[in-house]
Image 1 (cartoon, one colour):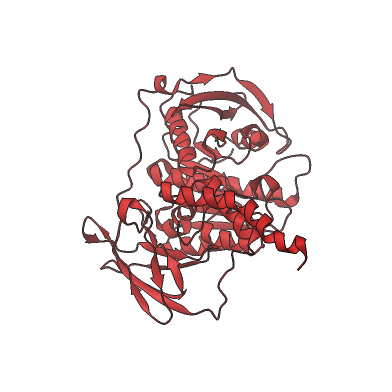
Image 2 (cartoon, one colour; image 1 turned 90 degrees about the vertical axis):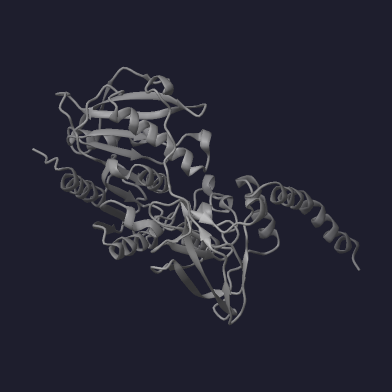
Length: 440
């Protein structure tokens, strides 16, 4: 036997021992591995040739169980299990809280459930560790009861604005290349929450400013907030107060923490602490790409504050998005290549995926506008189709704009396409219909 070949397995094992040790230690020490440990596990799987989605011919079985709250059944809760790569199998509970999920590939799964007004919950056992159940071929496995808790928003810092250590800049005027002559004033703000300084809050108003009380548009934007200034200037010029926020690097992939920043920013605006009086009507939320998940969390906490929302190129079901990622149907920018692996294995840790999946709580959403391009390879248009179907099934008003263009976002610039222009005017029509703010 060749000497190099003889020692190759030993060399490979030496390089794999550290990720294995870190992964096993984290699994023993915590209920849920950290994003770093999840990525290490993913890298190890890649070295070993996986993960692999079960083939259609794979042996399958069923799960059945009940969802409860305070000992009472929860009707119309969504119950989900997913394969390692994310393919979901789901059902809704009946009036007695019972559900049955069929055609699940044999294996071990941690079921999860959610319903409007309730927190997402996964089946857990001793020490609150995930409790996997086994699906066996041609059999129905009875699952212990999934118990939900009421969703209650966390208290915001008080009193405001002192508790937020609010700072503001002097206003400056900004212009946008589209529509022609668009101009607004912009003011930057910074505030503190949970020890982190958030410097990515901006407010836009028409210029010159008459002081009129205008409807609020609240945009959560991916990337750096100032990169979206032309969009916000154009919207403000159309007669709106625009509040813009981008995620803070302090929170990484913690969607709930980003949503808490947004709640605090909204409270500062509604309380008049940003120096602007708002119209006494609900706001409209705007989100795109991965920030749409943060808008969804915001809507769960502050549903009464919003008349409608708009999602552009957004995530609606992180489970199916994960399955597309592992099937190599997506093309992520290099800085996002580990975004989905960081969530962990969906079959054992479904909650991070459920946080990104508004399709399962669509009945709680306000009137919605969905915009998506057919050529999007970062977040495929199938995500938009899923959300549209879920909203229509729930009886929620929805408008859609599907188009073919190279743009993943609504950007306004020198190379703006005809599709981009059409998108902008359609957005204004939707905003007018939901706020009653008619352009002169």
